[in-house]
Amino acid sequence: MDPYEEDSVVIQLSEEQEEEERQPSDQSVPPTGSQDQTDDTSTQGQEGDSEAEWDTDLETDSGTNRKQSLSQAEVYLQACQRIGAIPVSSILRHLGETDLNLNHYGLGPLGTKALAIVLQNNNHITNLELEDNGLQTAGTRYLMEMFQTNISIQSLNLSNNQLRLEGADIISKMLLDNYYIKSLKLSGNDFDDSAAKCFADALKGDYVVKELDLSHNKFCDAGGVHLGHMLASNVGIEVLNLSWNHLRMSGAVAVCAGLKVNSTLKQLQLSWNGFGRMESEALGQALRQNSTLVLLDLRGNRIDDDAVTLLCQGLANNDTLRVLKLSHNPLTNIGALTLLKTVKNNTQSAVEEIDICSVFVCEAFVELLEETRQKGPALDVQYSIMSFVTRNLSALQIFKKFLEERNESILDFFHALDKEETMKVSTHDFRKAVKEAKIPLDSQQLEWLIGKFDKDYTATIVYSQFAD
Image (cartoon, rainbow, N blue to C red):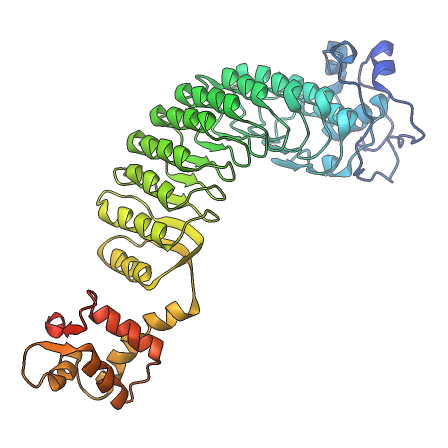
C-alpha cells in the first residue's frame, strides 16, 4: 500500500477527545495522499496544559490492533489527519532508522502526539532528538506515555522546551519505571530547585541512566542540595552536566559532598556556576576521596590563584582525574604555576590535559612544563603566551646554536672569560662578551638569559652548572 494513500483505518479517538485536542485554525491539514507534504517549522496546534484536558491514552486497544496492519508511515499520516497535526516529511523518511533528529521543528503538543502514536511500537529508533519543539506539558505527557510501550529508545533529547516544574514532574515519574533510557538531555528548560528535587528523588539508587544533562537551568542552593543527595545515592550516572546554573555556596558544597562518596561518576561539568574559593575548597576535599572522576569542567567560574591552591590540595592526592578545564577564570601565571607544580609533584597523578587557554603564562611555566613532559607521560596544556615570552624562551637556543657553529660549548665560552679560573663570571663581563661576539640576541633576550644563569640575582654567574 502506498503510504501516502487515503486509508479507511484511522487512529481510534473518541469524539470528546477530538473536540478537546483540535484547535480552530484557518490552516487545513493536507490529505493523506497529498504529495505536497512539507516540514512545518512553527509550533503545531497549541493544546491546553491542564490535567482535565489531557486524555490518558494515545489510542484505544481497537486502534492498536488496526494500527498493526499499517506501515509506520501510514500510522503517522493517519494520526496526523485524525488529530489535526501537519505531517513532517523528515519523520516519514527516518522512521526505519536508528536516529530521528527533529530538533527545532516546532512540533508543538499536537505534532508530538502524532509522533508518540507512531513511536509506541517502533523498534528501530534508539536516539530521539526533540530539542526546541514547544512540547509544553501536554506534549511531554504524550511522550512519557509512549515510553510505557516503546523499549528501543535509549537516548532522548528534550532540551529547550520550557518544560518547567510540571514537565520535570512528568519526566521524573517516567524515570521511576525506566529500564531503557540511558542518556537524557534536559538543558534549558527553566527547571528550578523544586524540579531538582523531582529528579533527585527519581534517580536515587537509579542504575539505568548513564548520562544526564541539566545545564542552563535555574538550580540554586536548595537545588544543589537535592542534586548532592542524588549523587551520594545514585549508582548509574557516569556523565553529569550542571553547567550554567547558579550552584554556589551551600548548593555547590552539597554537590561536592555527593561527589566524595559517588562511585560511578566519570565526567562532571560545573562551568559558569560562580564557583569561588569556598566551592574550590569543597571540590579539593572531594577530589581527595573520589576515585572515579576522569573529567572536571570548571570553566567560566570565579576561581582565582587562591582558589586554585585550595583545589590543588585535592589534586595533590588524586590518581584518577585526567582532564581539568579551568579556562576563563581569573587565574594568573601564579595560579598556573601552582597547578602545574602540583601535577608534577604528584607521582600518581593521571592528569593528561589541562585547559587554561585564557591564562598568559611566563617563561618559568613553559620551562617547567617541558621538564614535566620529559620526566613523565605527555601532558597537554592549553595556555596563552605573549610574543616577548616566546622570544625570551628562544634566547638560550640562539646562544647554543651560535656557539655550536664555532665548535664551542657554553663551558668554553665562560672559560675564556674566567682568567683567574674561579668558575665564576660577573654578569657585566658576560653581557659585554655577548655583545662583542655579536650573538644575535636583543637586549630583552640577553637580560632574560642572564637572569636564567644568575637565578639568585648575585651579579655573578657560577658556570660550573654547565660542566655536566
